[in-house]
Amino acid sequence: MDKGQHLRLLIKNGQTKQPFALATGLTFHLSAATEDSTTKDTTDTTGIWNEYEVTQRSGDIQIDALVGVGSESAAKTLNDVINGINDATFDWELAIVGGANNRVVSSTIATGQGKFVSVNPTGQNRQNASYTASMNIYGPVTVAS
Amino acid sequence: MALTKIMGQNFRAFVGGHAAANAVVEETNCAVQIQGNMEDASTKDTENAWTTEAMTSKQWQIQVDELNATAARLKAIITQFNSDSTVSVGFDQTATTAGGQNRTPSNAPFARSGQAHLTDVSISAPNRQNIQVSLTYQGTGALS
Image (cartoon, rainbow over all chains, first blue to last red; front, side):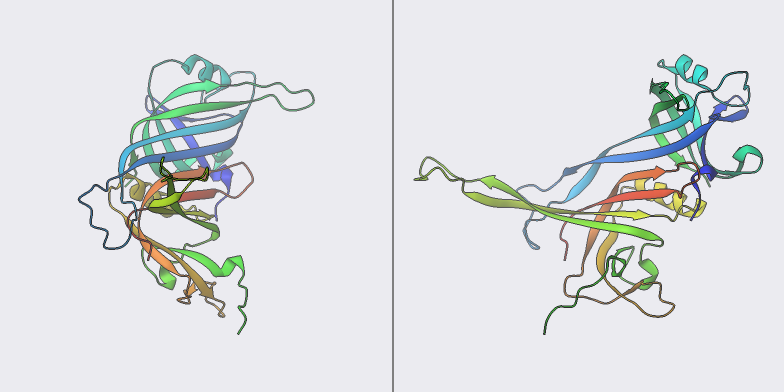
């Protein structure tokens, strides 16, 4: 088993890949819609089981992180996420990481494009200020070779 | 002879074939759902207020949770998700044998398998916790 801190999402910015600073969680989710393809022509040789085909694929990514202050040019921050809530797409990379600050990619899992769709910074008394950034996966997910 | 209960670790999912090598590695949970879709067949001819349920179709799915989150495993999962092809998925009791990691299928009377699409992938990676992978396989055709 691997630990959660060793799986990170990186946002590509030119030639650089930026993880989310102070990240605490990552949820990578893929979903396929299916549709029963049986028709009146389907012979009930094995009963009345539905037969499904995939009709649509989609995905979303959620990042949980703490709110930080100061300059962090090598990583994505809350400010970047707020600025990113628009229709622009970005390139992302899901990777196994290690090394300094768990930011060194050791193995790329998959790549794709996405859009930021929401962020909800929260400042609960006596707790770390945090935010959850939600992204929709835009287009196909490519598995790294 | 009375039934003997089995533990959850001996009720396992198999993906890709019904053999120990196909038991889901580092599985923590599997949940099978077999559902008959009912439709009320009552009509004006029905001489009371009760619904008359008729089963019109059946469907099944298997959800699997696992801690196997190596790079190779995650790549294989996403590759399967991207594919339009189905994969053999089933469940069975597994034998508790030394060194067998609870993976050897027992061909229990309740064991079933069929073809399925991988329709939902959720990879959760919280800091300082195990990466958890949840997969849903939507059966297509018979579960036999």
